[in-house]
Length: 299
Image 1 (cartoon, rainbow, N blue to C red):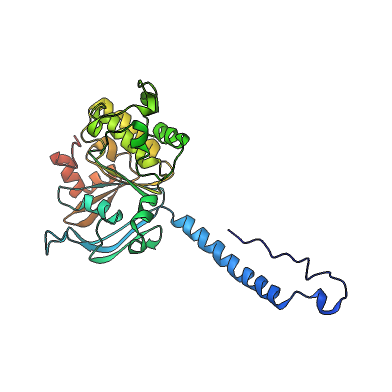
Image 2: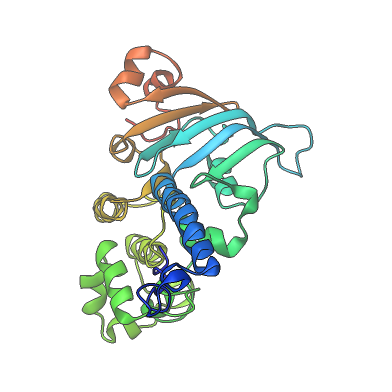
């Protein structure tokens, strides 16, 4: 934000004329510094806003410490633009989930670089990343506390309005409101009192209450029945508005909602495009689709 201009009443228009009508050297220096700093500051802020939610993998190579010498990602270059929804597909072991783990900085790459919002990921600490990135896993982890506490878990401070807003976006507010104790209802160990779809939507609300710039989804509907999948998918559509989404998906209904599909094979990005475009190529994606392999329940 631009600094307020320094007050001029003591240096301009004072009685006596001469040097009294001229700004003091200190004031002149302040004004010069302000004129020099403000455009750069404004430019940096505009640049930051343009980069908000952008993710760049630049020739990234990575292998897990427990599998010495085996590259899970081999020179991966991928750019996800701010607000873009990208589905990552490929056979098991192709490096899909590793992409999400690296964005969360659970590990650092052994080669190349990852940028988040135009800034090298290695310069982020865990708290920085958790403020920018939220991850919804296939099996949501809920705790034996209330719905409200599960949604706000890890938040230093929050209001009930924050909880309601996140729950509504996650398509779970109406259900929770009808529970005997509403948002104070205990969910049991692992969310035992909730169905799979309900647990997943609580997990989505937990991700959204932080208002992340980047939302990571790791097969969020793969274990759900048809009706639960529909409710969760509706929640994900709402959750993705105005933010970058990177999802690992196996179901065609989820994949086709993406702006772009990228196909991984042996740690490399081999194809990129929309569903029909990739089918027409007759390549890796088309082969996965035809085989009914885990791109996964594509058929």
